[in-house]
Length: 112
Length: 123
Image (cartoon, rainbow over all chains, first blue to last red; front, side, top):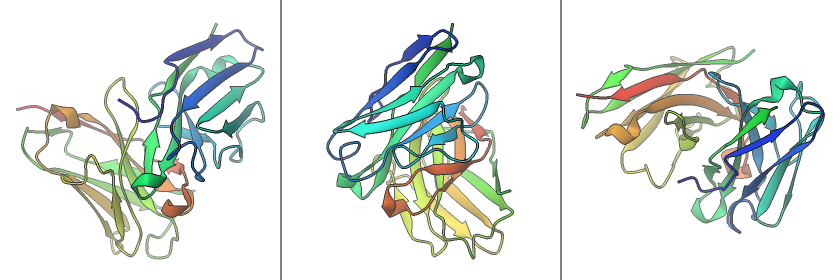
């Protein structure tokens, strides 16, 4: 049972926009700490695609964006491409447990 | 380019202690200001943070695992390690080592990951 809640799956056609939600509590997503997002391609290690709630690491396309409001965060992928098909995980820190790291259960993105 | 490489036994018996190592290339644990972590992923499931450590040896643990795990750093070998005692089938997972992007207490994420090492638990 993951601490943060994500939908098990989302899907979209090439070129469309999808949103992946991540719901937590006041002590994690709703805290002063940032939310981070990871993409995990089949058989590969996770890769950071968003850090500090809404910043993209070098090399990540600007089709990826994210935000946070209250106890929920969202990852938005515009102009879907086949290469975006992967699992996506959100991650936060728990202010009630000394900044312990917590993850969402992951969302499988299928590009139709 | 920083690289992390996990190593482990592959198979461990129930009730035994699991020992894993993460070798760091193209960076120095002695000089780095980053924190370092272990994260695991049971087959077909999500990610779980296990523990983090700083070069000084200051360590931080997932409260749900704290009683069974120990993270350590060996600056002379440029590697950090994880021990999990009294393993059960629930500890079977792909174990990743990773680098914190900045500082554990800043609520940061993990910007560099190893490829992972699979651990099975069976007698």
